[in-house]
Image (cartoon, rainbow, N blue to C red):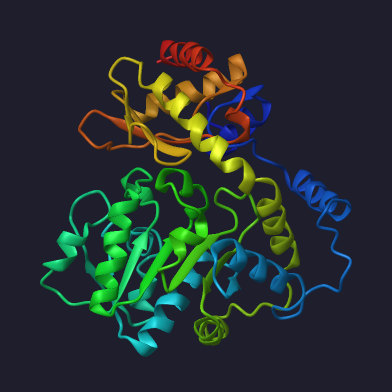
Amino acid sequence: MNDTPVQDRRFRARRQAGRLLSGGRPQTVREALADLAGLADGPLTPDEPVDMYGNGIVRTLERRTAELLGKPDAAYFPTGTMAQQAALKTWADTHGPVVGMHPLAHPERHERRAHQVLSGLRSVPLTGAPRLPTAAELAVLDEPYDVLMLELPLRDAGFLLPDWAELEALYELAERQGRPVHLDGARLWESAPHLGRTLPEVCARAGSVYVSCYKSLGGHSGALVAGEEEFVRRLKVWRHRYGGSLWQQWPAVLSALAGLERELPRLPGYVAHAKVVAAALAEAPGARVHPAPPHTHQFQFWLPHPAELLNEAGLRQAEEQGVALFGGWREPGPQPGLSMTEVTVAADAAGWSAKEVTAALQDFLALL
């Protein structure tokens, strides 16, 4: 039995693999520093003083993001958890502390319920179904709430998105009820193709929009919240209170600007190719892709095997064949006997044909 910690083994296996299907190749600190230094000679030449408490290059990123989302202004945060809390707390100041959100929403599942423990907010579940709520469900909800939060896409349900008519209906209901809409758009950047609208059109009726700088864009860290100028002004007060007014943030901000320059234009291509990859994976015996076809460039892939065996097979395939298909597998899947992994189709997957995916998956399954 291999006693090397699984995380270290996976890092080495993915680095040495000649081909990767899901996600990207992990970097060493030296490589990440070299990439960051290389940005100084590109189109984002930072010939200006380093930022101090949110000026300079930070304001450049804030203005650029606001423009892309069709909003007057935006505020940068070191983490998405802080960004979400600050946005919801800002709405609570004027509308109330009760937030309607999905039980699978990121603040409920991945932020240790910080909005409740630290910020004094309370959440109301919008639906028990593993999808975005419908306007019809919200219209008859028997528990009141002050702010409507929509996660686009809903990651833990399989990176699910509504269609445009469904989203419009939610916006219209919120307007009739006088409730502001906050978009948890950590992965909003890749959602426009499925919705069939531009990012400004998607965000136009939302009072605030949170986006990530590292999910999909490949930045080092960070997040932004965009909205009206007065909202952002009050938002920055809460950013300061939560400890988000850092002395300098230029390395993360520079990598985020590079992501907007390089990765954002590529996302529609990733979304299109994800459908090709997903269809090929779905041909395996007992396999399921969710959703089918994918709504973004990420989706869930389920196989009827124990996660421990699937993880070991993935490591062996990378080490012995130089092919890394998946990240980690986990149980339980959506049904007993199924394990699940999340597939992210990005630059490293672009050269894979459907036939190559099928052949590599057969080799993977042969290792079980």
